[in-house]
Length: 424
Image (cartoon, rainbow, N blue to C red):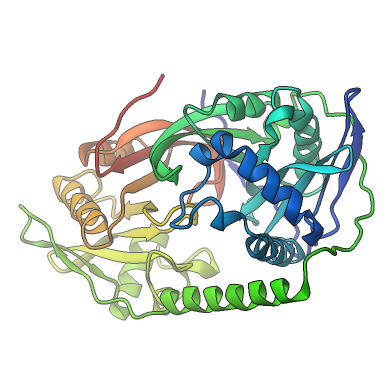
């Protein structure tokens, strides 16, 4: 059922500091649970649990070239704490420790995907002996309510491996809805895996009974690891961030893609002279936001940049539309694809062929494995174009801001290098 299209409301405050957020304690009857920021002194307990429960966690955890033991050294925990503290102070996310009867027993946190629209993604794991005891769901409900009522979050998402029944049960207990199955969306356990997208919106929150108030308690300072371990972790983290920034700012070559069967059509990098025609076609000459003001494409273009890789497609040398590829930050082999066209050329064979040329460039030259596009449910023209190019509809994202920032239901269309496989 499609909802009425509404402008995005809410949004996470830009000055929010999550470093002191602690929820609980909550008395479940069997134990006392609370959620707090990580401490350096958690290293030994974290190391013990993660190695002991490896068989339960690793198949669903993000892949890495490091061994499981290397990923759980004291130095890695120090690095995780440094990243978490920086993100929490900046309001980019929250990496909470689930504490049961005073001991670390898991983690539960969220990453901000879109602060302006109020969209976050949650992740969690719990010690195996507490799985199935509804301990995680009790503190999860408290976090869910805090996100919606205190932080202005409008949508919470959780990508869960299709065979992870425990995590799916946790999402269901929090009132989440399974919206789509995203084929080959994440590398987990050493290989690409299909993930179901579970989501909870502020609209859903109006229809549920609020969880038992957890309260917010003070958080004490972190102590525990030797200073040398912390210094080494900090230096390595700084070096990693510098390398990442250099990659993001490395030169991107000019793109020029011929469109088979349409000799008068070309997909190419945007240039300064495209600006007047683009503004005329898309906005009637008046850009509606700073993101589309003159010179917007003069920022460095590339899949991993804020602007994404922006390509124009032309017919008889005239600007006819654009394609934008952007890295969603969840996988180095997946990207979002946004497309729009001059109404005179929308849903034409040239548009489909141009889209096909872009997907070929993405899977070939860029080495991507998956492309996904979010299309409003009422936009049948765009849906037909993507279907003709081989994309498959994976589900419907409810109350989702989408690429335009307007909250409505969006169909999720995707194409992968190995084709689509449907799941019940």
